[in-house]
Length: 165
Image (cartoon, rainbow, N blue to C red; front, top):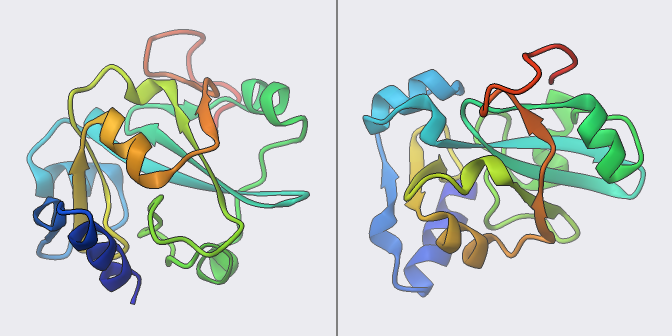
């Protein structure tokens, strides 16, 4: 159902051809990159967190990892991922297929600066077999984020991987 909602949205804005249904991609960055034919860094993975005031999604580059201390400094609470059995109920998309479009009301989206270095990124299209290819500017326009954040590490070789989600 969520793929259909994502496809319907992009059809309504004249970008329906950007939503591609593929052979099963799976739920890893590496599988998605293989299916799309790109470097894993170009996969825009959507991370789902549970905050005191509800669910938050952060879209990050495929080679980036959420840094716990940066997350806490930005959101003033510890990074807690949404449990897998609650993801669909809270976001409108199932585990592994969460994307920043066609979300349940009240879900806030943030984009991480790790995405800005690419001309094109590829996000989930609401299913384990679909992708949406957009520029970071188009991604921003179509997911209506609260804003851009800098909560990741690993993508620009700073600080290593300790303390990352």
